[in-house]
Image (cartoon, rainbow, N blue to C red):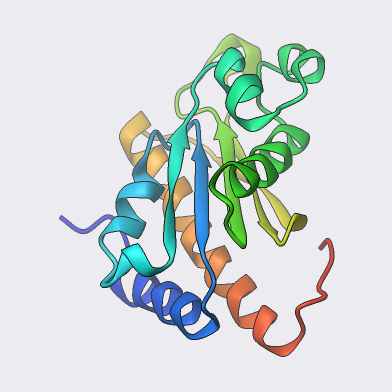
Length: 171
């Protein structure tokens, strides 16, 4: 069973290698799926610095410098938390690119029973894009896979955009 589109992963690897740039990942809701995906790309060690799965607020604060008061108020799931995770992992691993993702893979009261995630992609210390993913239903493993797949697709878009103009700023 293939979780990820091999062509998308190869594009990510090719873009990063051509640019001589690196990437790191901070995951919560996807529980390491993105790290797994990047490790499957040929020559991953040339661009994949590593990742962290930070599942609770204490680790998000300690390892990724997520602002704890806001994070506690939103159960560590918000646009801001995803952005802080992306920038934090970039700093932690000294990478050019950082991805942060947090959300819900199963219905919980804190989310009103909804399935959603926030993810952010940062480059050179600045958030380039942030997006909310919303799913109607699904088993948690399938939901996690869909979130991770969406992130890889968005990363390809950002890498391609970066070729034509690196000063993209926020979207």
